[in-house]
Image 1: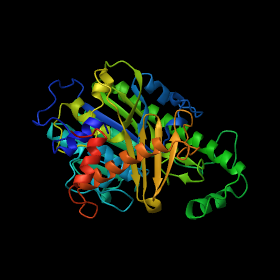
Image 2 (image 1 turned 30 degrees about the horizontal axis):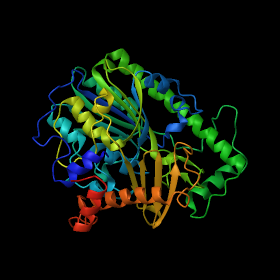
Image 3 (image 1 turned 45 degrees about the vertical axis):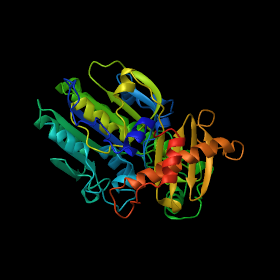
Image 4 (image 1 turned 45 degrees about the horizontal axis):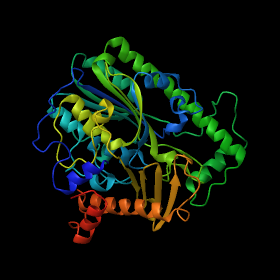
Length: 426
């Protein structure tokens, strides 16, 4: 979220241009293809400095705009994908946790691009992001089933020559059970201890040998996903579709490997919320951008790519000015979850504040990228500044919520005064 976007939202204007005009310069490559991967932490990939062998993703990064500081808005796949597809934070679109449902009043990227003349489809693996969560809203075809990557390629073949919007949410990197880790086999009793760690509320009981194997298994699984994505991209290339489409590779969430004693995605620390994001646009030069951005920024960005119209109330900002080098406003990233009594995170100026209930921890991500050392007591002023931003944001998303169970009344005078003091509104 840029400060400018928050100011526009609070003034009652739309998230795009107020006159509802389509982007003036429509790209010749209007098709948009998004490959969304669950459980993929940024620091695992070779192109992000990780240890996993990811030649296909590294090659894609060499042809793309790669964002080094992209942050997911939720630790769960459904909530994060909903933010991607609506340009809204979870509290606003209503799908915060598994079992929640996208509020029908939310405008989706599929709806906007369909109105702009693109043919739309999504192929989703298993129950991850299934139709029961409302994520099918706006898609002409939304299929939950096996092998969504192959289904997506088949669908592209059926719609050759058309402008399309395709989402493939077909790979989940978060697997630790695999025994195919090249030279490593599971320690005796690993499966039982892993199951206990995943289902118990007590701290996990995996020992050092278990964790070493789990990390090796995770890296090996990412390598297999890399190969599958490489095949998908090569099929696009050989068919000519790659040269006529904007291709997005994004992680909907990361994956914890006991950095904070947790496994999978039960926190908002960087292992879970910092995700890879690459945007390949035909003819655009490859580059790496270190600006903090959010996954929900993809909706207004792809609307601009396709020359479509921004709906009212977007909470994300188009990344095109940053990509083009014409603007680099101060950005802040927010994440949220209802787990553990409510978790919130804000990333700003190289610092992260994570709150669990009424307790907050402050981290210097430049010196401590995995957020292991709490600096809240050492730097209380910095913690206070981030806490003020987080509090103002929390009230804003609740005030703008489309979910009546989460919505609060209009912001009071004290809150508006706080927002003015933080520079969000005049």
